[in-house]
Length: 223
Ligand SMILES: NC(=O)c1ccc[n+]([C@@H]2O[C@H](COP(=O)([O-])OP(=O)(O)OC[C@H]3O[C@@H](n4cnc5c(N)ncnc54)[C@H](OP(=O)(O)O)[C@@H]3O)[C@@H](O)[C@H]2O)c1
Image (cartoon, rainbow, N blue to C red; front, side):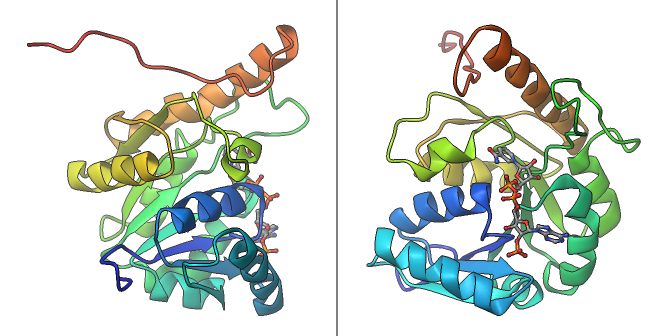
């Protein structure tokens, strides 16, 4: 925990597009951020950039395995094809923690076609690989990295899947701190829907000339 009582968030692959966006938003919300990378130097460069945007919140640079061990909450933001190989290198540091997995299993060149892995989804694949000692929660699959990095309002909601309600509650709280509304989307199997939705949003962007289409949950509160 940081001095302000907020969790330290370690972002693995935090040098990339989505990791940078989440780091900016959570750093501005007062969380100590650890940028994880395969190389310390790359992480240090990313931390130097983050310090320019959010100078009042401390951030650290580490290799991914050290970052995973040091974070209260760990976020995985690497390309889908490197999801499991990255988890393999950091799993020792994840026991008992929430792992937020943003992986969308797009398979180029047909990124507008849903092509989920044999496990059913990338989220289920991560949970199966790590075992129940790690609380895998999937989220942010439908949010464009570009929007996270800019100081703009994000209209897209966040579907949050995972087997433990308390872990989903925490990620919904983190989504709110990052300026979005998160919704309970049920167990990790349901991550398939959010992951698949990204290909649909890509189709909508293309066919309707929209930048960053998103989803919004609607309904009336029950009294
Ligand atoms: N971009 C978006 O708008 C967006 C939106 C929703 C979800 N996502 C998901 O977020 C994840 C990250 O996307 P991104 O666009 O941020 O990706 P990215 O910028 O291409 O890559 C993120 C980081 O992954 C690490 N990486 C690259 N190759 C690797 C390898 N062979 N092994 C281990 N790590 C490797 C790199 O970090 P180091 O070189 O520092 O190790 C890189 O900076 C993906 O799963 C994607 O589906 C992306």
